[in-house]
Image 1 (cartoon, rainbow, N blue to C red):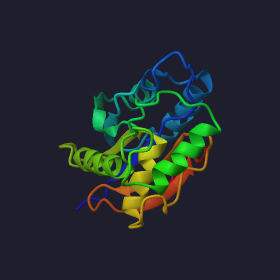
Image 2 (cartoon, rainbow, N blue to C red):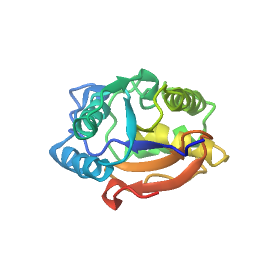
Image 3 (spheres, one colour):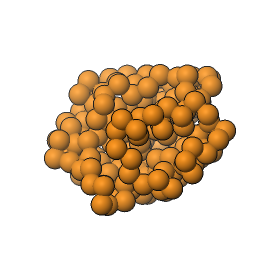
Image 4 (cartoon, rainbow, N blue to C red):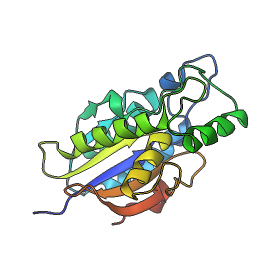
Length: 197
């Protein structure tokens, strides 16, 4: 069986606007520039499919990749970030305190947010569906840091909140997963690191 990869990338920087619902935030100029650098690094590899969450920032990132790789984008809402619509935008540092509670109490709904255990189950199933795509090459998924962390916990076989995390504060990090076995081949790197496996 040919070894193919699934690249799970978190969107980079966004335009933060408290007056706009978080899922509608677009990539910022910096985020677009960073994603374009990553897209250039992916050129020449045998990518056969691009998946993205339905959130604007993920769709923006996927569109940049699609333009470089000459592929359509498949939108899967289950690739979205953990549902935080109960609170809407929360400014730092309070936001990070709530995030810590989200990962620290995964079986509870923190302030009405989707439970971490449910978000993890959802993202794992969505990644499995993408990996089962009928195409035969590498696949890239553009998604989000929170569910990316939950996916990592699953792949590293650790409790929620105990796995490795994306390191860049603005997002724009990626994992490499073996598409056939759905095992982790490369832990988090930033998109500036280029693409290496």
